[in-house]
Image 1 (spheres, rainbow, N blue to C red):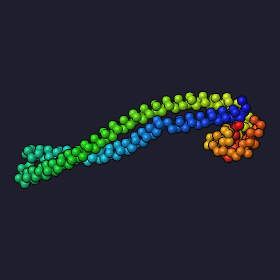
Image 2: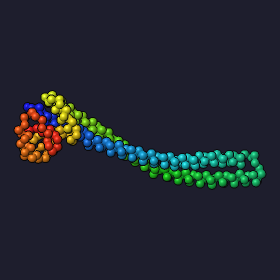
Image 3: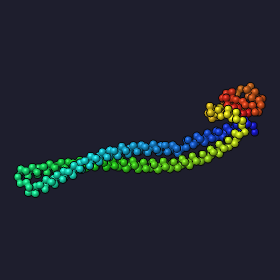
Image 4: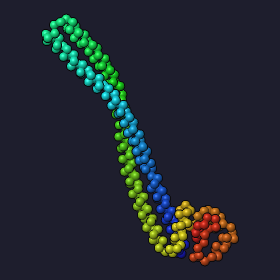
Length: 237
């Protein structure tokens, strides 16, 4: 087998390696991981936004509950004063009772407002719980996809290692200058640096060559390097 025939074999291995690398990059599990991570990020943002809203509602609820507690203490202090005997003047007693009345009314309003805040928080808590459950499910899907992705990558890497080893073994029979020229052409022409002449057609570009050109090429020596006049790739007869 000539060096040019070996070059075609190298081209086949390079094409196979490129296909495996493309398969590695485009494994469906990779897209699942990316979409899953995007979903997790979206859910995290939603959970954070609703949680912040919940915290705001809960702060307002606690604010009112704390004020109710202070009013309760004040009412108890007034009640203690009323029945301690330390105040006997009717007007003063009436003022204390009126203040207690104001406190009870204020306390009632605050309790109603605290209850409203509690009712506002309940559906928000449910939203957080629902989004958290969705996030956990998405996280499990991503973990499963990562396992499958690692397995797929390992399988492709093993295939690629075999192809590259076979390519290297074949390339040892090709002169360095010819191999370097092939590699340069391959880099500039979409991964194909050499093609086979099938009849009058170059397999590298699938274009037909004029009969006179084909005739001239076939009269050349078997080891003479020829390039396709259409695409510039090395042409193997």
